[in-house]
Amino acid sequence: MNIEIWSVGKESDAFIDSGLNHYFQKTRPWNSVDLVVLQLPKKAATTDIARTKLQEEEMILKKLQPNHFLILLDERGKLLTSPQWASQFQQCMNQGIKTLVILIGGAFGVSEAVKHRANLCWSLSLLVFPHQLVRLVVAEQVYRSFSILNNTPYHHI
Image (cartoon, rainbow, N blue to C red; front, side, top):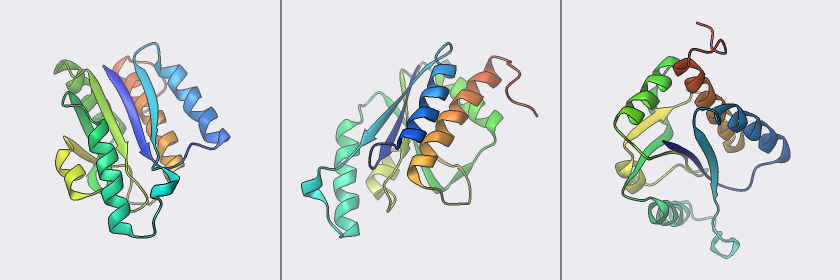
């Protein structure tokens, strides 16, 4: 199963890239993980929130393939423990899902159409984090999930 972390916004700062590469390397023996940054063209920039969400919706839905399993990260989503993340990944692998997409929406969230397309909706926390930091947290949780599934000593209960 391929895992893609999609993040609406700008490219990562160097310190975030370093952390992402660290966790992607650690996960690689078990599973591939890639970051896909979805960025609106500068000419499309607007201060109109509804229009921005619509433009992001179009970009996201155009990139999504019918065989993608989409997990939307949203502050109103379901809170899971790390072992529950691992269990969800195992279920996806057992179902034969080829590509699992974890979506970090834009600054204003995602449209109802994107929410409707999502197979699952998870929350990382009741707190709000900068999008670049969320990328790093998700990469670490993916690594933690696979370390749990492979019984390595990384995760302590």
